[in-house]
Length: 110
Length: 115
Image 1 (spheres, each protein chain N blue to C red):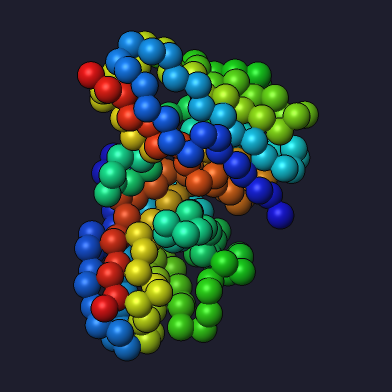
Image 2 (spheres, one colour):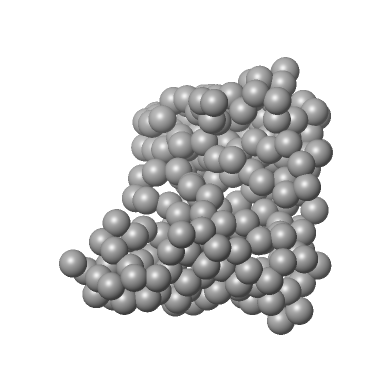
């Protein structure tokens, strides 16, 4: 069974600082890995999807890396803003199934 | 594109009552997923349909839970009878299984409270 772990569980940074969120998974036979954002009381917004054959994906201030062999992914958010405050979820796909981590709750202080 | 539509957005009911949650997937998508999110267990897959057929229901917690997909544009998740421990946010997601990324698109969720 795929186990997904996200560290840290919570993070508080001043505005402008870079954010580094970590995700690890136990079964490296994955199809892809997705990072989601969830605002309080809201649904999931997909941020980045990395195929198993890729090493990284970038979208604006967001960059996600994937090291499948070691079972790790990192989400970098550059120059954080208060609007980046949310919970970030990592999800790994094996076959059709997505397995989610518990999330990292980020607070960016103005 | 309207995205995945779920109704109701909030549901408050008393223990023992029947609850029905509804989902309309993105038009053209042939895979549909129901998830449950709780503080204790995070996001868990309850059931997966492909081409309207249930493929994996191993995540359905017990017989009180049932799900149907009568056609490609509608699915229901029913809890009968409901219990306080069923209180959670229920998400529906859809995807196109022929798409190489198989990316799942999530609805806004239904927040269920059972008192």
